[in-house]
Length: 186
Ligand SMILES: [Zn+2]
Image 1: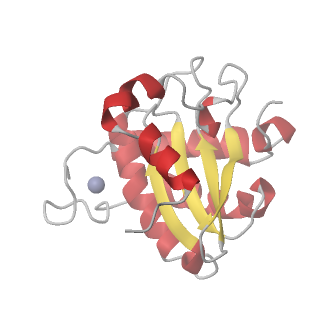
Image 2 (image 1 turned 30 degrees about the vertical axis):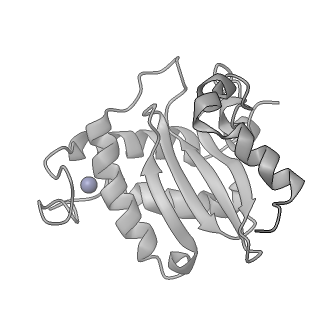
């Protein structure tokens, strides 16, 4: 067997299971953990941009709906209802549907992530997020995909809270977003 290139072997050694536990403490913090969450406002932020091996750029947006550690976070049930509605809306949007890769709640329950294909800025998607939140805030009827066949926890939803949160975010943030609502704190 040919010898593996030096860089590959050293990487393989570093990731050996017996040393992984110790090395976790030395790992770099991932980018989203380096934002000062105590100064973060509500808004739409570019969390990261990634390039796929094929050369496409994917922009990850931070759709932040409550101020971390200062406001009350959303409930997981509200975020779940919002996930079904927002994902359905975005994947059917005539202009944007081809670019939509993913919408989902943050584990900390202060917002959502939206992944779109393309090298984008926060400003580019303000109208799209307004439309999305308007759809959620005004939604009446059965939440799409909220059935035992389509979802892993279909009754775990709070539509009323999702609508309330969407309305508040629209009125208080998206109606007139400022610098601090579109760019992460320095
Ligand atoms: Zn679900």
